[in-house]
Length: 82
Image (cartoon, rainbow, N blue to C red; front, top):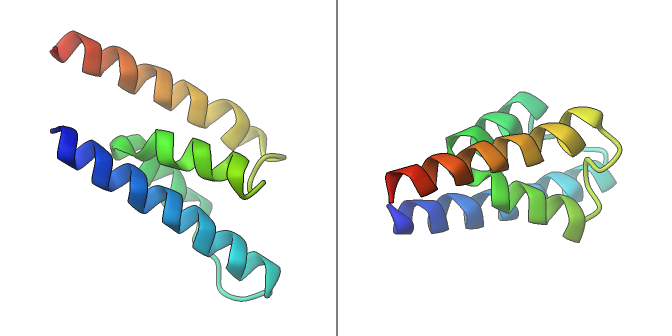
């Protein structure tokens, strides 16, 4: 399970990097719903770190509130499973 969490979060971080690069060059973007779904399946920490490192999606209320809420829920579930 720890390996899955590590892989999904690294992938989400890299996807945030990719999406920011595409935004700068006005090219095809990763849909917001896909970013949120990736966060929901375990990648919330990667998305959150990517948001702040790349200053991406930080003005979107759905991301500034939604990602921390998803992350909090995931941390609580993970703690319950341990």
